[in-house]
Length: 212
Ligand code: FES
Image (cartoon, rainbow, N blue to C red):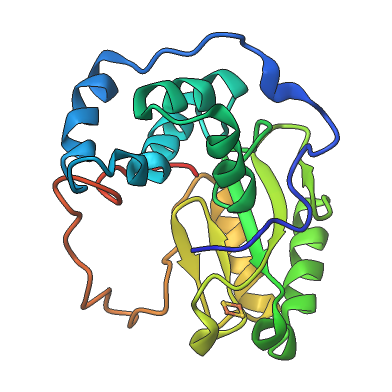
């Protein structure tokens, strides 16, 4: 899951400097040694991404400067090195995002298979463009580079879930369900439900699902 966000939500607003302090919750603090344990001794900096993800989930889908500084402090890294990671990957947000953070892949395979129509359908149904959040705070629309699901292009990601093999009708059905507060079926799984990746890992990256 990599690539830079072309239009990061709220890029022009320097809102990530507030609040000025950040503390991991007691529950998340207790999980940090387990995360560090996943990496060889002396290589704890490798935990920078899972710790940033942990902080982002705690904050509600985005990272403050103070949270990145706390991760740097825990890992003994220079803050600038944490900022470099957090600003490179589109999975980290630097301003508040909507409850449903929609990221549309527009890289060549998805573009050839109709990502322009996916963007247009989202715009039509939600009334927002790329890089914008709906007034009710329910939806943020972003554009990302390849998310590794090219075989089922075009696709988009909503929070942790991938939606693949899209066309305007399917996008409309997904967004209509979300607007109603229902959960649409995600992935490219059979209609009878997924047959693989059924278990959530007990610990480590991927063990906590939520907005990212
Ligand atoms: S090009 Fe869209 S997922 Fe790879």
